[in-house]
Length: 536
Image (cartoon, helix red, strand yellow):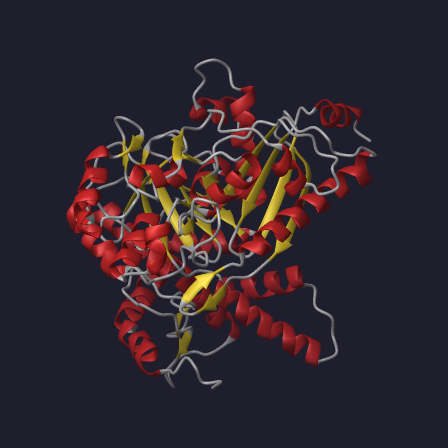
């Protein structure tokens, strides 16, 4: 047993990061050397209910408690200590979406996640009004769409927030949000590092005739920059997180962040000119900008947790369809009377992509489980297409499904590189798709035509990044910026593996993209004509 770690746990020289991802709630406890002491996870899934992708907020609490209990139990098993003190805590979650509460804190409508493509009209009108890109997933787009729809709940709003802000409020009673996540609720003025006053006024003018009993600034969470204290774990929060009563109240919490911000931290990508890509249910790339760029429907402008502007390309769909196909192969394996090792199964299937035809043999796939904002599809229809002349084999099948995971993202990235002349020297990557060594990196490098690095720490994911933000709040030196803290302390001896684009793969991906863009009409036809309610 490591006595140094044991003493750190006893003294509370630790930081806890909790992240609510699209498929897993993960908790990571780190020491003052940023090494993981314990980690845990709880699996969950979103549901499509009454036309909206949502999660039950009761499961939010249950998952939070289960993840913490498992982490606490692991600490007890490994070190013989009941977790009572923690130096700092941070909460993160899927970016933006819409949680609307009344003055008593009661939920007014089910949580509307980032995945919903139901706010197109509102997003378009606000983009035109503000002369600033408002994506469909942003909280202000959800709010304005509810106003346009004359939804009854809007009059009763006392507070709107994101999932990370909601969890932070449950634990602390503080209506706070980190700048990265806040920049996806409402545009941030980079000079003040607060919500844009001009746009707040423009929004007020837009809805003046509704005569609501609230104004926008009063119902938005307060914006905090990385490193600031954003509240303390209160007694109710401590009992919510740890119903056993062991955990002490009074622990400081850093500003809650979205998974975009924790992804930047986990890959040391908060300095100007750096970039990272995060893959999961969705896929997004973020480039920290050193200049202003024009307004594009495909490019979101958000911020790092410490306030630098970021050009963000987000595609709603990435790994869900790949996971579904791997599940099908698992079923076949089980039908043969065998018990599959899922890591081995993923590895075997992914590695087949390395021996495929460069373009995937003329196959075509769209992993659209939900609507795709970049290509203008309002609903999802996962689709696999081939012609009689296509080379249909397992290697090409897997390559095409990996290629399509990056395809919509590529369309947005082309705007940054070709129209705005943004230079991307390399991309730092993290997410489950990169767990199989080299394969995901090679496909990503082919798709973006840049070197792709995966750091040894990236596998810890956003929960680890959130724990780092919590650590930064309590351990930074005076005037020490987040970028310097990450570079000189967290990542000073981090190791990573870099993969350069292979010219044959790059050319193959270009051929695939020609099929992909031409075939969007097929995907649209599937949306138009494949009936959703076939079970009825």
